[in-house]
Structures are given as C-alpha cells and as structure tokens.
Image 1 (cartoon, rainbow, N blue to C red):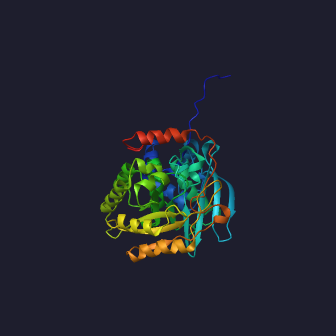
Image 2 (cartoon, one colour):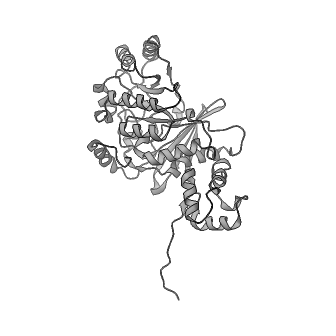
Image 3 (cartoon, rainbow, N blue to C red):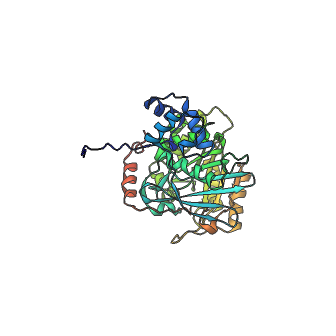
Length: 379
C-alpha cells in the first residue's frame, strides 16, 4: 500500500473572479485567455454552476476545470417575503456566519442591497448591524454570490425582465474597508460578460473612509452615496464614530475629488441622512445641513429611522420630517424621503443583522483604523 502523502489542491472559486483575473487563471492552467468570456457568460448570464453544462467549451477544458476549479455560491438559509414585495435572504458564508441581502422591487426595477462584511466594525449608534460586532470581510465570490442567488431564486437567469436592475452596497459592513473584494464584485456587476448593470445603477455607500474613497476614484466610476446623518462634527462624532478620524470637511472634500475624476460632469453624490426624533431632525440642523453641503453637487435622501430591539432612538413625526424636507427644498436641493420597505421582516435600512459567530474582532479592527494613517489592508 502506498503511504505517500496525497497533495490536496484547493479549488479556485470562479464565481468571484473578474474578467482580468479569470483570464490570468486560464493562462496559469495552460489555456487561452479568450475562454474567460465564455465562462463568465455561463456563470453570470446563464446561472450555471456545473462545468459539464458549458456546451461551447471543449471536453478537455471542462475536465480540467472540474479538477482545479469550482463555482460555489454561498448558501441561502432562509427567505422572508414582505407584504410590500420586499424579499430578504439570510445567507451562510464560510465559517458559519450569516449575512443578509434584500431585494426591493419597484415596478420594472429591482434594487438589491448587498452586504460586504460579516458584521461591521464602525458601530454607528443608530444601526443594528453595528451592534452585531465584526468578524471578517466577505470574499468577492460571497459578494457577487448575493446577486447570483437573488436572480437564481426567481429563476430569472436568461429572462427578458431583470429581477436585479440596481445594486446598492448598503448592506452589512463598510464597503471601503473591504476594498479589493468590493471593487472586483462591482466590476462583475458592470461587466458586459457579468451582469451588465450601468455604473449609474451600481452605488457604493460609505460612512467616510477618506483614503479609500480617494483610491476608489482611481479605479471605479460607480455612483457614490455617503452616510452623513449630521451637519456638524460634534453630533456626527456621536452618531458615526469614524467621523473622529475623518471629519465632515475632509469627507466632503474627498467626495468632490471623486466627482472631479469622473468623465460625466453631471454626476452627483447622494447624501444619506437618517432622521431620528429629537436627535438630528430639527429645522435648525436642516438649515445647517443646507449650508455645509452648499458647494457639493449632491442630492439628499432623508431616511426616517427604522427601530430595532434595544435602540433608544425613535422615528420622527411626519410633521418633523416634512419641515426638515421643506428647508432643504427651499434651499434648492433635490431631497427625497425614502419610503420604508420591508420593515415587517426587518429588512429596512439599518435593520440588517445576520449572525456573527465571533464578535471579538470589532474592537481590534477599529483600533487599527484609528491608528491610521491609512485604512487597514487597502492601500
């Protein structure tokens, strides 16, 4: 009997490979790089995860791929459907952790809210996700896998009507603290051999990691949203602790630099502002917000606070929301009040929680960020 050790080769998960990385992988295994386009179309256009079904690829390549590669999405653990049509999935990723993904249908449009991390290290005071702690970044395959699973759940690969027309990186986690994997996944979302979604329909939302935002402008042209939630540093320090590292003036300057790098001169930044009763919803703060944003091309999305267990914050009255909105519109801003969707299944903004099996890394990750000068593992 041969007792020689058998080398176990870990298979490469092709689900998260960008076009460039797919070409590099094929060259490494002795194949032609043009095959990347065929494989990408099978995975992301047809929803195929079995190499044997890739009929325009030769048998020898299919056999080789079976040996060295796989197409492995994360696993759907549960699905909940709201009375308003919103659908939420709990998705198990490596290590047994759960993240949540939400699809919000609106006529012919479907907006998918995608997570980028297991938990979040930033601990914004009004967000349920931050209370779960932080465990790790999601891989590119786990990020794009949420898009793949959402389409698959509707059996909509190859359908004329798209279930996912827009993607927002607004789920669990801070996308800019998982820079490379998020950029690769967003690239697949926009690639014609991936999902072919317009750059105007892929939005990254950040709490304000300034150095990473500057780097994003060098490699991507997705739409940008900023979680501001306060018009001055004193209040924002309490609501969004990362503001102590990158205050409002620095953040807005970085937003302007991002816009300056875009070839489309009509681009604007979406300012996200969660309204909380008695905290940041006064007319005076609305006027202050109008003033602080006066030089930034932007639109403002007002988000009435969505309650979650053990939170001390409350949603403002309709009158308070309307007064805040009126101040902004009279100042010349395009301001909208986000309609709450999916709150009956805890799928509304700020309510995503998932399940973090090891919460010990949040303080470690946050200390690294505060130590600076650059964000961890992205520059």
